[in-house]
Image (cartoon, rainbow, N blue to C red; front, top):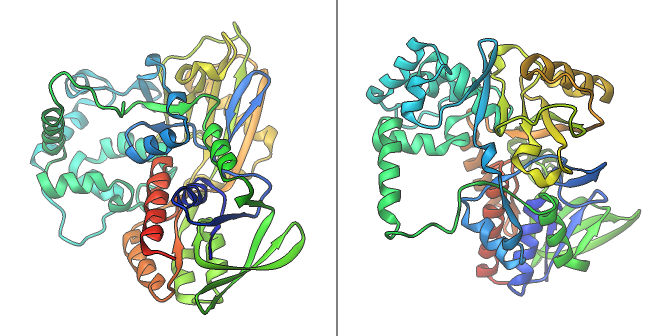
Length: 457
């Protein structure tokens, strides 16, 4: 029998593609009229616009493996070197984020006292065993209050758009917890990790994975389109799963496709839909499991693109800037999209991608499109001095955009895994559970598919 994959975002597509590449039958049931979920690229007036995520870090072997298998490896495009510099808006202006410890000591990113407190991290202690700290508590213990408020909160804002006081450090930045556990001090741990990495490389060699910020020619939508094309008639758009029933030998799905109701029998079911959708499918089966999954919160996000004609505004340098919530601004940050990936605009044009909303200002995402555009323009003027009138404006709104791994998330996921044990052949994947990034979704999707193949029919 087939494997039914519910959800046609990147996670569901990767699972189905891997299964079929390994000789297993699989179908993808996607309720909307398009694939990719939040991931997508649109061409408009000479600009390539990303509907959600903008890029990935080329450091995940699974992503390279997928790209190679899809003949996309040669179409990976690294960010322009001009985009290396990053900025944080703090104390009234944009300040460059230092790229090295010596540069940090000489920078103005933090006041002198706060910089000295960061240096004091060398003497930090470990957290008590088994404690799931908030990211803020972890940061204050290691880096101090100011660095946590300015730098650590800015970093999480660029990934989760969350509340630093509520996010779980173990779920959001497990590498930091690992450094603390193994080395006590994050600084000492980072130094040891760099030394180990250099020793692991043969003399004169370079790693295949560049580690650079990257995308694909044509944008991230290229990956979605290629996966969809490779799956062919295994894709069912406009197919809403209305119910799941456990039957002998597998599962029966009630599906409404293009207005018609049908039943589909499957040996395995992979729920790759958002957590709030998955909750509804689980509720009639297992109320406890549904409550665990449904307890995962989402931060709303509005993506506001502002495109400028050549010569109307200077091209910005660097990747872009982030705004710590403590600054009280209405913008989470902005990506200098035309600087990062110049191929996304026609020559000389400038494209800013602005982020609005998040866990701290969800109300802003409810503004109408003209109001969001006006907000982005006002904030760009105040924070970065951009005064020109854009020739293109486009808003993509995600009322439930980014899953929030709040304190207790790891315990919740352990309970979810245990609960799934009561339902053989039922599986969950997606960005709500064990990683929100594109690389996480690809890695987890491939691993799940390989597990299903190894388990047999």
